[in-house]
Image (tube, one colour):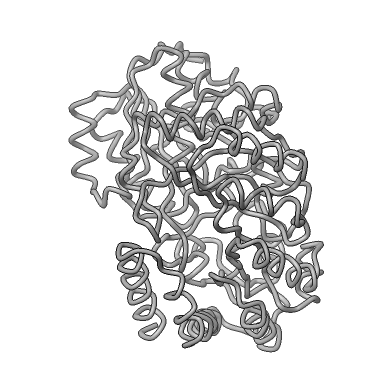
Length: 478
């Protein structure tokens, strides 16, 4: 193995290949979602902090959020001359992300090119893609790996990567997930390197950032990549550490709106309450959102969350068909969803229902049940995703075995733009049904009046109006 020198300068980036959610479990265009904010690149922030702690000079660019282009990326490469370039990729944007790596190799042939996320979110799929201009693919959590790459360690001694060795691609040993202690000890993301003004809350227009609170999920939903990319064991940061980061964002970056990132934030009641008590006792004027499961909320959790600034809670409700919920291994019931939304309403926390259509067995009747259930629950916000077979999920294996999609065409779609049908519905059918479901939810006069009735400032009214008009145009024009 060729000797490698330590990295002095590193450029970490989101390529100029579309404004996407670039999380391992969620890879979809922001503009296609109805109520999603473009989130700050937390993965780049963590890697940047780890590299800075190792003495590396780091720059971070989110070319997608900047609505920038490859020419700007080339100018940065020539000016900064990084010895390592790290980019987050997604399965839908994969061909375009590869083009960005080709640019790096054309401008700086000796620079180490590193990809994380997307096709490489799970170790087992590391050899399912031609790496092309990518020297190293990070398979799994990147923080420890990026430090070892920057230190110049021989690639074949670094667990959890795939890399070029001449003409062949080598996959090293699978890497264990960070322990809870190691997760706790990570430095705060390097937000001083981010353009925090690019990431704004849709309602207030104020800067919003992400705080990583927990990783892992014990469930085995067939469409979800979390078990493969973050493990089944839940690893939680201490409430004190989370709120320390919250306070740091408020004091040093002027950010008071947050998304608490966890696969199930509300998993453990005592942990949730302790975190909220820390926020309240420090008298932090913040507002925040989180993800949840419909079977992990309770009046005590929600009471403390509301007191601590929680204003919206997102639920993966998925379906209005109990058969579909059971077959996708959701381990939740329709009544669980009804109760969760009701409890949020009683606590004064808005609910954001996430629904999923297009699993292999689903026909028109299943989708109609989901559309009807959306209207019944009447969440404050809702989104409909079309099932997308991320490599590494059970659903990917099922859909592939049934011949429902061509692997080479997977990069042409995402959660809003189906390229995969069911055994009885085409991809075009699913796209039309998604638009219809969202029209029937958002364009109800009662919903519009209720939403506008909550507006408490001219700025929020303008943001709601602008967002609503854009959404209406999308849903009507198709």
